[in-house]
Length: 355
Image (spheres, rainbow, N blue to C red):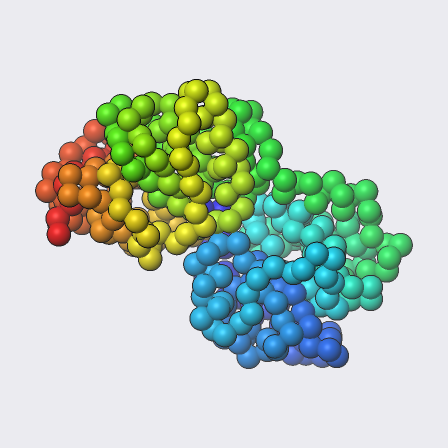
């Protein structure tokens, strides 16, 4: 799962985003067309959005929420530009800089780019970055957030810097040799919890296997390397930006293992269940959005796994030691045992899901 806003930050940043329009500092485009990057659903968006607005969101649960609110969700066409581009930049700076560059790519001549960030999520740095890229920036503060905007002249945009920042979002190899990209969970290093789970993967996992919340594919690659009985492997991940790195990492793992194995990578919200049955499932389930703990996410992953596993199926998960998953596991599986407790994490195996 990619880094994001703290639990109350999206609504605050979204509300602040429209203050320049509410106060008359900025005017909405005459043709009613706008592009909203990293869009989030909220009361103010529903109030102000018009039919000509297009919302882009790579995290599937947020994209689904926008669609349920009746907003148009998708990606802009090749070369398509807009007189207004709105964005909610992420905290991760390389990802945010790439988003600023992409926003300028989509901005029509004479158009205005407007961004909003919570002060605690790097608003001051975001404003400085936009000024470096686009020249003069206006700004104001509201709701513990900073909203800032630019209507750049063509000669004011630093084109060399824009090209460099645009490239920051491209998949890249980390120091550990994994394909990843800024903003993904533990994007530039192997997560300690995932490494602990990998070290305790039983070599006899077999049949149809799935990795829930697969990220950039580290655990899936470990399954390929360690479990020769796997017949097919499915990766389920809600963040679309993780899918291409995951495909590259599993392709590398298949080559290294000399295996020809069906592997499918899905953009999918695991909390809504799985589309097919599995003989085994592994997961380092998410339990937070940004800085806010939401252990119900992990519980939803466990419930979806129990529903999808065959009668003798096995679930292997890793979680922070304090997370209260044992009661749900005991209710949903006939056998539950702890395989490891180390560095604040626990690895649990659950067998034979209950009907």
